[in-house]
Length: 251
Image 1: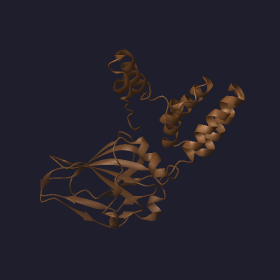
Image 2: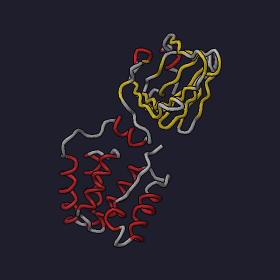
Image 3: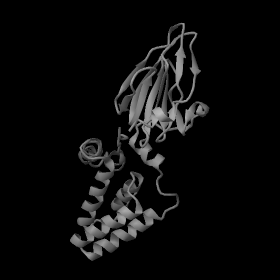
Image 4: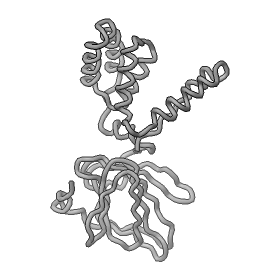
């Protein structure tokens, strides 16, 4: 699930002077068009940069969209190729002007976005910090609290190949867990059953006393919300790791 794009600049700068323009900018352009799902956000960033360059717009608005492109995974090599290609059709002066802005953006302080940064840009929930229960996982996972009132809800993120050990949620009454995939691709498996692929929107209900594991696919990041179901005398029993031979059959 891509992170929802929200824009307020129209109302902040022109809300009183031109409310209709502010509405079209914030609610239609950024509220609807940028959040439409046929194109991913990275592609929309590239299309926008090319459109502004073709129109000869090389001011702060283009720099804003260059920064947005970088934040959504466009690399220095990719933007150089994009500008060079576009220059062949729009003209040399425009190419030089855009390269001057692009060099500022891609040489600003800070490293290029990591794989974790790029995955975070796709999520509406934070990845959080390294999982304090990491001793029960193979690979690196992260944990971010979403709600600690009424129901405990955490966003759990797995790097590619990361998975937790087999485990059981015990409860005298009630209990268990609910998983909702919010990004990437992973798997859930109950003891003695075939693995179930999890993609964005997949919901898994895990009753108490069922031995199971869940984690990322071998080559994909994966995030799910973990909802702890209330019950009596609840607790988690951590068991053995998922065997390499079983995990390596997954794709």
